[in-house]
Length: 238
Image 1 (cartoon, rainbow, N blue to C red):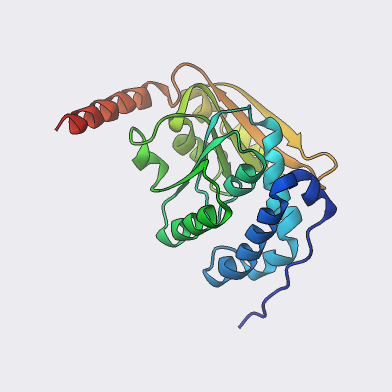
Image 2 (tube, one colour):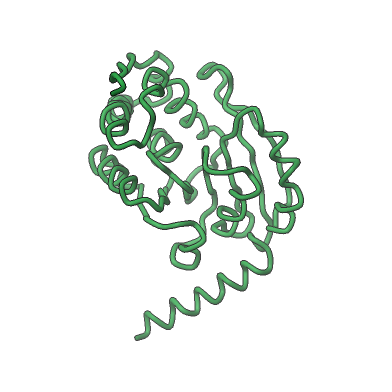
């Protein structure tokens, strides 16, 4: 049996980033280090670097999220980046989308415990919930899939002129080049690589931004969304 790793004290940067929600951030870190490890949501080796590699790395994504928008965190897992983002940005309406029951149970417990009234947990796969959840301004994701595959799940959930923000590592530029054709077919009109977290995390967090035009997901997904919307309206009339 792997010996439980000890959660280090929060770095000073965490107090600055999380502000009034610092105590909640500490509680979330404790939940990840305890229940998260016990339930197999994160590996025990991640506990010593939870703050720098996970919570702060995700929280600084807030630097590039517009004010007052709706967000869907695709493949939210243990709540990264969705929960840290929710802790620092109460102006956002965030949906944590996750297909596995054991993970959605954990997410629901965290949301209730921390009083995150602006966060909703939805169980399902991105391709299954299209038409069942309202399109959002921003889709976020971290460590879910290569960019081309992630885009096929995330972009169709966007509103027209929305954007997908994917936290990536050293492979960001390579993934973006490889995904260029797929992104174009999905309605992307502009892409960029951003580095955020100056003075908070080292190395900086790398974000791939994909902005879409009038038809997120392309023509095929526009038709699919329209069909899903018609089906939803028909069911409500019954």
